Amino acid sequence: MRPRLLPAVLAAAVLIAAAPATAAPPTAREWLTTPDGAFKLSDRGSLPFRPGGSDRLTITVDPSRSYQTISGFGASITDSSAQVLYRLDPRTRDATMQRLFGPAGDALSFLRQPMGASDFVGGPFYTYDDLPTGRTDYAMAEFSVDHDRAQILPLLRRALALNPRLKVIGSPWSAPAWMKTNGSLIGGRLIDDPRIYEAYARYFVKFVQAYAAAGVPVYAVTVQNEPQNRNPNGYPGMDLPVAQEAKLVEAIGTAFEAARIGTKILGYDHNWSEHPGDIASTPPGEQPETEYPTDLLQSDAGRWLAGTAFHCYAGDPSRQTALHRVFPDKGIWFTECSGSHGASDPPAQVFSDTLKWHTRNLVLGVTRNWGKTVVNWNLALDPSGGPHRGGCDTCSGVVTVGPGQTVTENAEYHTLGHLSRFVAPGAVRIASTSFGTTGWNGQVMDAAFRNPDGSTALVVHNENDDPRSFAVAQGGWSFEATLPGGALATYTWARSAELDDGFALLDADAMSATGSPPADAGNAVDDDATTRWTTGAAQAPGQSLEVDLGSLQAVRRVVLDTGADTGDFPRGYTLSLSADGRKWGKPVAAGAGTGQRTTIDFPATRARFARIALTAAAPQWWSVADLRVYR
Figure (cartoon, rainbow, N blue to C red):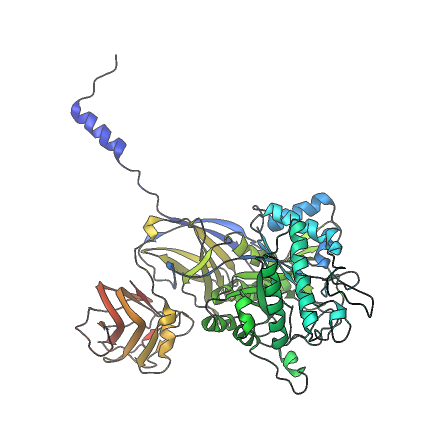
């Protein structure tokens, strides 16, 4: 017979059953790659978030402020890549494709495909409409992608099967020779004739349709690879000035619209800044067009362009942000950068140097400057960096195929993997403080992303040759980590109610600042913790920083972040608010900082201006690398 429970015992049992389980504290997971190759995308286990902050240099991650949406990460299946992959037996080739595109591998999600020959071919140069000298084909009756059917298209279909979210863009290195002023695939310009523009637009339509029919949808096209490379070194290329590219974009846009093709059109497809050699080769009487992307987007053709594509071989990724500020509604895709090495560089040095340069400039530099993609050049090459005809003789692929049936994962495999394995297409970059620079300043550099499933991925690089310890904070929680010298790590964590403090970060792009002293006050609100405003002298009462939010806002938190100068916090301050910058009420908060981040909370107040004034003297300077305002 079942025993009868007393009422009090029964009530207690019901309460225990109804009580919610205590939520486990959030944790982050670390994947690590070191320059010596001792760790390569190695799972290093979990790191617990703990309530409160840390006295270590702290990266603040804030999902309430978002930037660009990510399209994907990858490389190019050039003719050379296809040829070396087809030297592998079918089983090894498929295993390699799974390592590159499969969910258990790098999960690469973006491929930029040459429309015809580049310098990375093992056979003759070609386009999709080559004709004997003297013949023309304005109707594109002779157009054919048959060259790609043997190796390139099967590899693309396999990549799509392994990663259905994969996107493919097409880029021509040259128009067919019969369309060009010199009758050659190497050098020259497009003939400036309406019939040529219309014919070449049909060429793009035919390409998109043929690839789609072959099972490979084309997400976007760029109009010309490196249009300012006027003297390609023995390989297909074409000088295409802004005026001609604008005419071609108009023709392609009109043709796509008529054919009901939704493929995006991207302009430029060249370096962050015009290469000095391209400037020097400007024809007499012409301008070098150093602002090519801006000029193109400002032209009538701009309406057809989804945005701009960039390469890495000259300039700095900050040029992407400069362009974004002028054209915030146009996207930025980064479409080419090859690893490179000296002829006698030892493999260990190549791995280390490539890992660090690509991490600073591409993985983090590109993404922190509005890039929707990070795309390397060749997916695969042989041990000699080929096959190739002309062009680069020191390039490396994401993987090296050979000798024999061996496949070696290069540094590029790991730099891409730190993004592609953890940042899904459709993710958005979110706010995170970063202290390192693309030019190398020995600090910790990072970028953060919120995935479509709500999880967060934070990619962190220690620029210094010595280990660096730091903390990562979100909401009122933080975890601590240490990276070996030169190392790259990705940290991931699931969405968690504990990490959401309910504050929303305001857009710094609308802000401006003035200071006392006045020099460089804008550095405090430039959304860049590698720059700073500083008193440059000992702290003294009356020193102040005033911020214009750009419009009237309901605000309730201000954070003063010293950045890497963690001792430069205010020893005493007041915070005052104003709706118009003229009438100021009593301070809404007063206090003293104690470390890198001074968090000032106050009742929600509608204001456009905020003034922080020092109230205490101290021998240390007062510095603000990143001033954040929350509603």
